[in-house]
Amino acid sequence: MKERPNNDVASEALFVGALYSKPILYVDYAPIIKSKYDFYGEEDTRFYYDCFEIYYKTFSQEVSEAKVNMFMMQDPDRYKQYKKLGGWKTIEKQIELADVDDIEKYFENIKKYSLIREFERKGFPIQKTLQHKDFPKMKAEDIVRVMRANIDNIHTVIGGGKSSTILGSKFSSKIEEWKDHPDMGEELPFPIWNMLFRGWRNKKLIVDGMLSNEGKTRRMAKILNYIGVLKSIPILVLENEMEENEFYASQASTICNNKEFGFNFDILERDISLGNYKCEEDYLFVKDTIGSWIKERSRVYFLEMNQYSDEDLEREIKKHVLGLGVKFVFYDTLKGFKGDNWEQVKQTTTKLKDIINEVNIGGYATIQLTDESLFTDPDELSSNNIANAKQLKHVVDHLILEKKIERSKYDKYLIKNEWGEIPLDPNKIFYSQKIDKNRGGQKPCLITEVDLDRNTWYECGYLIRKK
Image (tube, rainbow, N blue to C red; front, side, top):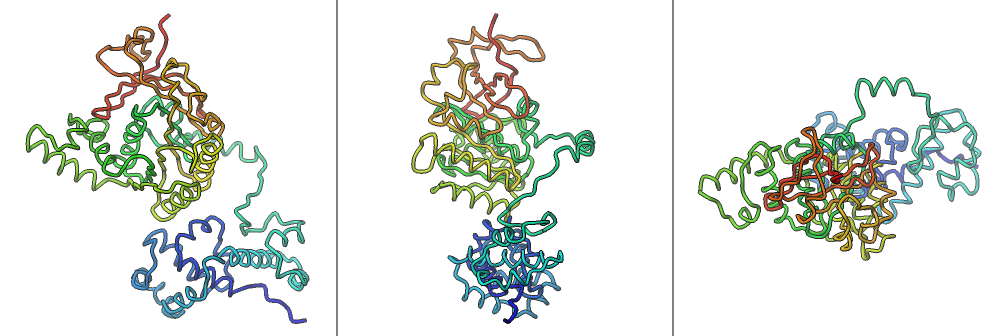
């Protein structure tokens, strides 16, 4: 019997062709393909895959002959190899032969042969497995079952699987690491949140809940502009309620009025939307000075989600992380797709948490509280006040439940901060923030001074009841 080869270059070529044909597929396979191990042909399919990966992440997420040629010419050695292997004509032929609907089948074949080669490198007798009559039907997992023993050092990735570790084996080095580099995340524009949550850490999902029309998107706008504009950190905003024009007005009022941005320009958001300025000089200052500053610094990628299924969320987040280097994602508003019962909302929340874990970024989502929350005291809010979705508390890392405090109840509370215990000023608007879950530590109730007309949010301290 003729020996079966330890590679399937046809599946490799078809897989690469499918990616060039439909680049968005890369989002699904990038975490579980290892070029070094999974592609047999170093001078052809591996080269074209490696080029595609760099192209997608740094150059463009759309493929055309002109764009690919331009990308290849940016590096003389890469262009030389590209021309040697046939250039665009080779890619075009692979696209023509590939069926994007069969990419999972190509992937399975690639992984199966990748695993076979890894066993072979480790000295395992693989020919018996290769010659087995059922080998063409086998998947990578079947190969593992056949050769289960001593596979700890296999380097390929099977379906994104992970190996367990001995907890405690890195104890001393981890303690030393935290001493030199404390486990703190990115700074938020709220000092107490920073202290309680240890900043916004990778893989942590923050969920902020409010009643309808109380400003949850505007609170989010301060955070996203602080990180994505002031700090110029790439972020993605996925929006299924507000339109882009509304977000521009929110961005303008946030940056004009909040002192963290350094302009301290007092103007109402509705006046920005209506084009009402005190004088031409004010108009030009907002349009040109602040506008130029925002344009130069902004790394905020905004996307209206007409479809917001779990699959749409995953695709868009991974696409922006892989292609644009996004570090944080904001989702407004967290809801179930084609239905808002708690099972669907929890499923979507779980999916969002799984995605940010996989791509190692921070996540933030808003959610609506029940109408009954209107009758709940601010410091007594709980996950029971989340509309149709109290179960999502089990999934998130930080859960904040916010509520506007009625002026008639100001005399029930005090603000506790470094200056003592202070009464609530009846001329100001205050919101409470009940920290209902916090993987970073304590769960107190906070108080923030809010002006929705100017979109200003300033922490005042802790909300306590009068004794």
